[in-house]
Amino acid sequence: MATNLMRFNPFNNIARFEPFTGFEDMVREFGLAPALQAFEGGQEMKMDVSETEQAYTVKANVPGMKKEDIKIDIDGNQVSISAQTTQVKEQKEGETVVRSERYSGRLYRSFSLGHDIDATNATAKYQDGVVELTLPKKARNGSRQLTIN
Figure 1 (cartoon, rainbow, N blue to C red):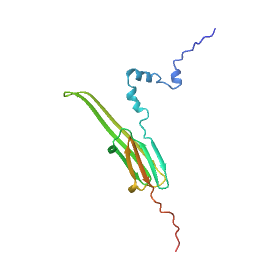
Figure 2: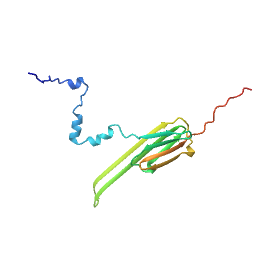
Figure 3: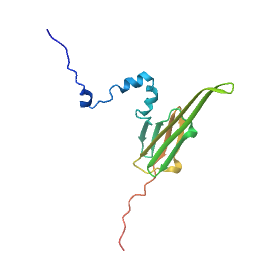
Figure 4: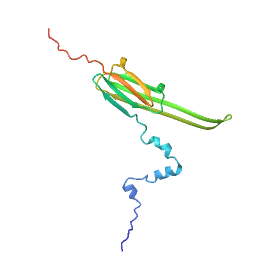
């Protein structure tokens, strides 16, 4: 006769360093899970970068943003893309606000490229939630050997 009994150990959760094992169930029970999802790692801007002899092409996802909310900074070989938006929706019945929803979102990404960028000839376009940057490489002056007089 085999038994599948397990000895109860009240310190088991502490020994495995899992003191909050019931926390997720409590959050689910109170309906707070959607509110806490924002803290699970935040939104990250996804990007593709390609390079040719003359320029870099960067495609960055910035969903839900208007082109007026997107800012791009170029300093040498450093490129920064930031986007911030705030949306407010209200539902009124007469003069009483029945429901109000607010959303505020911010995306930011900064990166360095292998060559300095010719910022005066750089271009950006925005379509369907994707910013596409064309970043021409700045011409290098090359090396020069000095003659000692």
